[in-house]
Image (cartoon, rainbow, N blue to C red; front, top):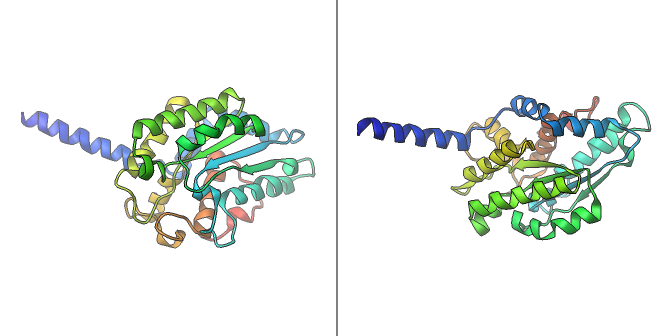
Amino acid sequence: MKHTFLSLCLAAAAALSSIVRAGSLDEVAARNAALPDYAALHKLVNDTKKPMLWLFEGDSITHGSHHTKGFRSYAEHWQEIVKWEVYWKEDKEQRCNDIIVNAAVSGTTATDCLANADWRLKQFRPQVVFFNFGVNDVRQIGDLKRYRADLTSLVNMARRKGAIPVLMVPSLCLNPHPRCGEYERVVREIADKEKILLIDHGGYWREVANQGDSAPRTWMSNGLHPNELGHRVMAQTMAKELGIEPKPSVVLGLPH
């Protein structure tokens, strides 16, 4: 009986560790680089004759409303990276004709996105789609199975429409919901199971903060939303983990 109890305790500890632990920037970048979608993404980016459309789907954090205080959101920083800094790298045939569409809506969940995804994918016909949901899903719905099913449906729908899906682990909060770690884990699990490119904001923020599940305070506008510094970090994390790091780059060198 003692051994059984000990085994249960160890299993519980391992499960908790799998919730809170995430790879470093370099580890996630290496993980992504081994995926077929990584090669496909870089083939698209390197084909400077063909413009790309990058679609962002998410909630208020991706929307970038209000809490950026007039500064750029991470989606806007991404536009600067791919439309200017990659363009400036060599010649005028680079990515200057790319289009970045931010279709995120404040207060929404993965379930809300799924209801509109088919229309948006048909309307915009993106080559790449970023999905960043979770902070509202855990609070408004609280159904982990539904969250898993919705995210899985979204990435599969994107692939059927010919787009490369990218899943994002949400950034941290100052006063996180007790189940946020479970939702982070689900994003990583879907990414591994479906071989999806991953941007692990939560993992990197936890690594930097070194204070458990709470976000670095200087990166936050309020308890839930990143400020302009937090958005800089999110864009820089995207660049590192997707291997799109133009040199020189003002965005990647911004202080945070």
